[in-house]
Image 1 (cartoon, rainbow, N blue to C red):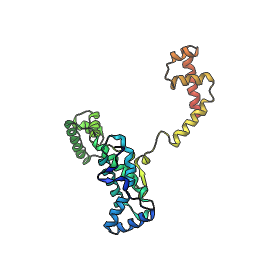
Image 2 (cartoon, helix red, strand yellow):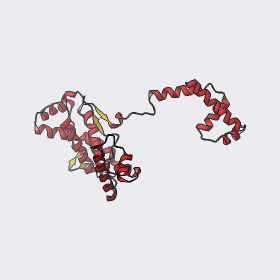
Image 3 (cartoon, rainbow, N blue to C red):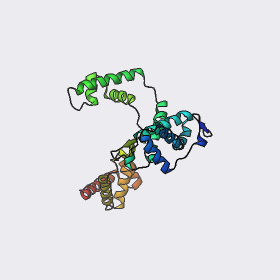
Image 4 (tube, rainbow, N blue to C red):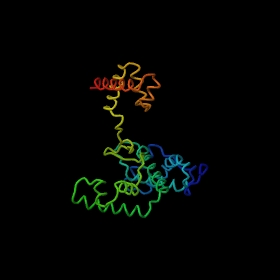
Length: 256
C-alpha cells in the first residue's frame, strides 16, 4: 500500500496543485454552478486527500477504498463550504475528510451484534417510547422495572446498537469554524474548583509535621493499613490511628 502510485485509476504522481488564487477563483465559479470548475477543483484537491490517506497505511485497509472515502469527504466539504466564512478551504475540509475516512474504517471493522441483543434493544426502545408518552425523565431503572429485566441488561443492549463516535469527528458552529468533538468535552476532574481545592489541601498538609504527612501518604496514596504503617513507621497501630485522626481534623479545619 505504501508504494502504491495509482489509486482508483488516478495517477497520484501527476495530480495538479492549485495556487490559492486558483482555489478561490474555482470555488466562486463552482458555487455559481460551473460543473467544469467543480471537477477541476476536486481534482486539484486530491493531493490533500492523498496526504491524509497516508496516515492510515497501517490500518490494513484497502488503499483504493480509503482514498474513495476521502474523496467523498472532500466533495461533502466542497458542497458545504461557505465562502463568506473567511477560512481556508483546506482548514475546513481536513476534519471532514478525516471523519469520512475514519467512519469508513470504523464501519468496516465494526463488531457484529447478536440477533437476541438487537431484539432486546428494539423492545427497550419501544417500551421507552411508550413510557415517555406518559412520564417525564424515563430512566434505565424504570425501563428495567417495566420489562422485568436487569438494569445492566438495558444498558448493555442499548450500548450494543449505538454507533461509536470518534473524538476526532468534526463538528461545526454557526460561525463556520471547524471543531472536533473532543473540543466540546469538558474535563470535570481538572476544572478551576478542583484545582483550588487541591491547592488548599496541599497548603493544609504543609502545616502537618513529617510523621503526620508520612502517615497520610502511606494511608491514602499507597493504600496501606494502619497495621502496615505502624510496622513501617515504628509506632503502635493505636498511635497511627490517633495521629491520622488528628491530622485529618487539622486539615478539615484549615480547608474550612
